Image 1 (spheres, rainbow, N blue to C red):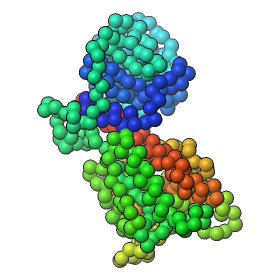
Image 2: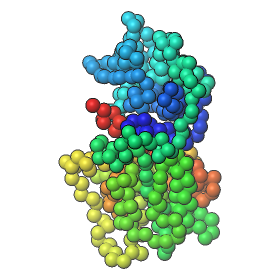
Image 3: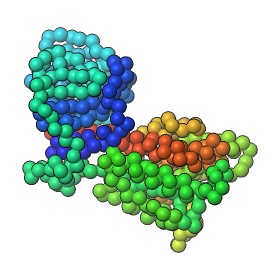
Image 4: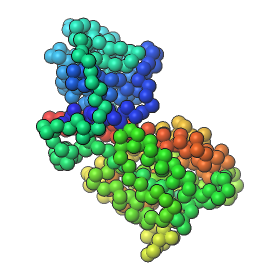
Amino acid sequence: MTAITLLALGVLVAGRSAAPAGSAASIPRAIVIATARGESVVPVYADEGHPALPTPLLIPLLPMTQRIEHGWAVVGFAGQPFRFLLGAPVLEYAGNVVPLAGGAYVARDTLFVPLQWLAEHIPRLFREGYRYDPLAARFEEARLAPVVTRRATPSATRTSTVRPPSELARRNGFRMRHAVVVDAGHGGPDDGNPGRYLPRGVKEKHVTLAVAKLLQDELKRRGVSVVMTRTTDTLIDLRDRARLCSEECDLFVSIHVNSLLPRRGYQNVNGFETYFLGQSATAEARRVAAMENEAMRYETGYDPGEIDDPVDFIFRDLQVNEFLRESALLADLVQTHGAAVHPGSDRGAAQNPYFVVLREATRPAILVETGFATNRRDGQFVASSSGQQKLAKAISDGIVEYLLRYEAKVLLEARP
Ligand SMILES: [Zn+2]
């Protein structure tokens, strides 16, 4: 089952800005693992400051095993045990203790091993068997027969011995194909915010639709299928938006543009922020939610009292807890990527119990405020085609990183 899973992942990663090559100084974003069975792309993580690889993605490709005992990760490679002291740059194998630039570590229930191990120590020990090319960021079985690159669609590589995805989903909650619902905020009679510093005639609803369409393109390019809540200038009820993301959907993302009512200094406030459904809220979170919930005025059966009630969470419900935890991780990753390309400030990821659009979500869900239309620089950025492209790319980077991390975690949990 994992071969196809990994191919699906390979499609995802291959869509990232293709920069696998790297000098000794730069960290590749991904490496290629080439064996007689084909090629796969494995993302490289640098969360701890040095390049590391998630073992759940390596184990299906290479003759590897792993177990964790007494603070050590014991990784078997072709029957040879390698012992990593967790959290320390030390590796023990074949009777030697060798220092590493950075050690193995466990993050989000996943074991990460240093790229240095695969790039230097494996080729050294298995001289006839494996080699690593740092310029191509490619680890391969030596004396490999000519490799047919299999970057095919999953359906093209499926064989009769592979269980269909629906069965996989039943067995371990894991899906090979990824689906995301992208929501362009507002629409139709609901203009959203009027956009003081947007060009004449441009309202929030136009910016959200433009960014959402670019985000759809970015995600599709990386092998993620997308459902849009709207593709034209039309009104969709807030409650109906997140409902589009149900069982077969990985996550929901709603795109918006922020604004402030005129008061002293309001034009100076700027930046990018991401919200997820959560228990607590600041006054600012409440203000933003009230503004976005105004969309309900245009809906039939509008009840103004209802939208002020925060969601009552039953935190003992494990499923709700998991959903909130995943939403928080998703928000954090999207915020990190978004803030990195934004001319304004990094306003952070925050929980918020008031967003009606997120309340109906049964899957991880976030709401992105791409910038302030009441700030001149933010307004120009979100209305410009280059700004919209940067935003779409960054939000997509955050989403894909989330999907890869979630996948690695589920893969690990699914192992006996
Ligand atoms: Zn909005």
